[in-house]
Image (cartoon, rainbow, N blue to C red; front, side, top):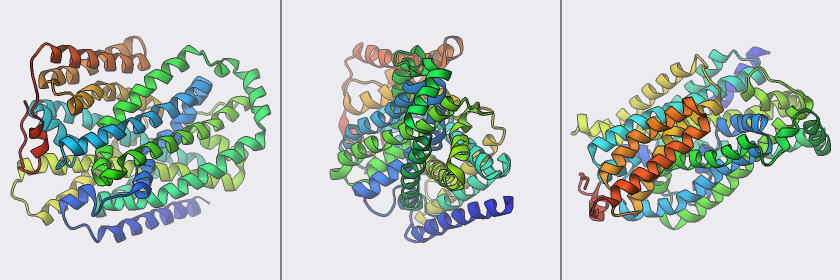
Length: 474
């Protein structure tokens, strides 16, 4: 049976790689590797956003949040990502206005705040991206081990090998094309498996079981849940604003389709974690205690859904994991290819730059694979840990895009001091409190230090960045 299960995974993987290869044939230059070969409309843009943003965290960590924090955990997780994606819509329009020739979030940070700020940002971006890749690797290992009985180490290697293979072929073009196929599988499975399992147990039975076993998790004033509701929103907004994946799509989606694409994606995404979280409610009602808390959803699907639901749930989670890992891998490889390679190899021809994109993708992917093997944390814990970083960069990015008086000094202080304060609070008071502290310190530093000067940024520096091939900070 194990051999059959591995064959099924390899079959899906070969399908994804074949689609990636087919789409990669049009990718000839580094620019196409980073942003694709054409502008996306609402359909493909929304599919690309949903496929990236419906992650292993969405399908495994959302039930984990519901299992530990109840109703508010489920609502908070939906609030976390949905609001963040919708709030990126005005940022995406502003990105087109102020830095139309950019390609990555690194372009903006370097041109707006200068080299020193960019180095600080890149260090934290590195930590964040590997954190995301690790969570997806953990998810791939957990779901294949729980549902298919494939040993964790082998499951991680298989998942990353497939992601690396189709991501390196055509970069953004391959990742986006495969994502459209993956999101169809994801939405079909979510719409089929989750309601089937939940309603087969009976909504009233689930409610009564939770009332008997964990009545505090039905409380809409549960302090931990309320804290997650607001701290999680800050985590999600910071993740979206900082993640180059969203900046890539801001440039790749047609400008007149940006607002509806991001709003539709945000609303559509919010329903997925809330729906999947109902599996955690079944677990609570039945008194199920998973060996690892992020295994609660696949364990419920396996126990109450039967063979069909079992395999369908594998499709939704595993496809979500691969799509997110591929998008994150391509996004960070694009930052390196666009921002760093030209500094060290300025005279590379287009085809050579394109080859560097493939090499960088493989290197980053292999490092992420190796970091995932120890399985040293749960997905939700890792997400909250890197959320301290995400919260610190919300205001340098948002204010840097909209406010002329935002200074490089303020951005530098916020980028260094806020994560430090956040992690001190994280380890001494609590994880969610660490995220909130990081965000508030960043806001105070950005506003306070900027208002102390008479700085007035020249937007033409950003507007001409990429056109002239150079950018300066104020």
